[in-house]
Image (tube, rainbow, N blue to C red):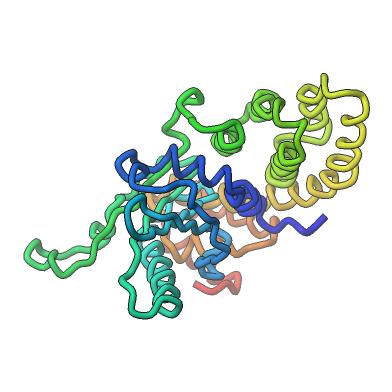
Length: 334
């Protein structure tokens, strides 16, 4: 089993790189007047990735190309925010990635006009998304200067705003989104069998089994709320009527051999991630803001003991500047 450095990123890309899942997502979650323009049968997953290395821990991305029903082509750029921190500069990052796509287009398609790009942000964090969808809102300028400010909107797909019965699409897409929506919930272990149950009718096909494996690996490596026994029980429930031979072979391959290792890595990764988030949530709660320099440094710390100490300091220190000095004394770069 390959080393899992970011289970959210891996699950996102494995799931939405599947042609049928990508097509289903674009069909259901783009605004209707936009999807009506697209020839969805022409949709292709592009392998290009435009996320900066330093932002890779916070985002993952996918790029699709799709023909217009009339003439032309459009890109759908999907950015996945897979942590619980809302990114104020998300539209700025989107613009950077869009520019890279256009630059690549100009190299390959010299002399042709630029294609439109539809930027989408898929979010499943704990906090409410409170950032403007308009790029121009990042600027402070008098109204007379606004005509010189570039502008665009992005489409926000915030899973927390949708009840379970409002999540649309084929079972593969619904299972993915339900899992992402409830991934940080305390009752994830109770919901897992219901989510896996959606895939029951697909398990006679190789693609269905592969998708089930993708989900189980994500659960095992991405959270410490569910242990091996709970995953095993959920798998038994969904495979109960699939014959005596399939359950032992799958359990041995995915749980005993593969997911055991994923759980060990996932617990370590999950605890580290939770520790970072707790520090930043205390900073936000106490001081009303989480400055980007502090957020960047805390996210870079890989020592749980250091994070535990910082949590105590965040609770007790007098002000934000005092906490910033504490970080600086620990030989971290602010």
